[in-house]
Image (cartoon, rainbow over all chains, first blue to last red; front, side, top):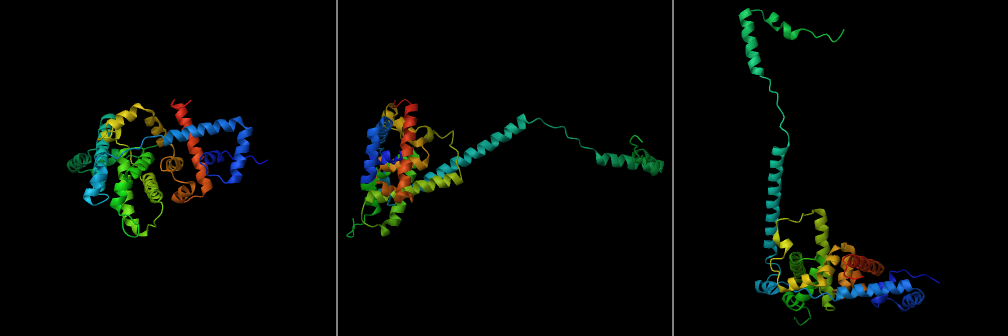
Length: 147
Length: 172
């Protein structure tokens, strides 16, 4: 005998099976306590959802649409308002991130060689001694690496 | 109603606005999104009325609201928007009234939360069947899937819902 898929139980509950499948499920239900239990659970779950109260639209919502003569007169306003809130939130988050970055990230000591000062100083010394080569020698001395 | 049996969008809003809003709320789980969903659905109703074939009006509306909802789900997946922590509307609807207070005290809030927590592919068939009272064939048409897929998703959706309700203590 074919074992029916459990998926059929919901369809059985909803009266959405043809005669053959219905007979198949009923045969299985007679034979299986587990299937009967699942069917009971499905019925209870379905009934809970069906028993939810009708959610009423906010007062004046539908009347407001009808009075405006447009299905979506406030739709764009609402979207715009939401976009504005999102933009404000993103800007706020970015500002906060920037503050956190400034406060928490350790500042690094920047080395700024005073190139202009050194050049001027060197030029002055060279012009006094009139021996630019010897003045440059300490700087230009080759470095020997352990040879 | 016109002579050819095609309603105006105003008639749809007036006579079926309650149905639309209820389905929209059960799909989205909050009033803000439900309002957007209803308005977008009514826009599509106005555009689609010319092609409407008189028949099950609520079936047609359920299909429209489902399509709008799924379009929005896909759009959010492409461009996710974070919930705004400072937005009081998302914590408590601005127009929360006695109904909200009463609902918060009952089981319906927990059932709604369990429903809203289902993945869309399972939530939609459950809402269309158990809230909008659509047939499996109608649901299959709305979702563009075979009836067998509806049967499977609906069954799994109810099983998942059951597990969530057991976990929250609504049922044993």
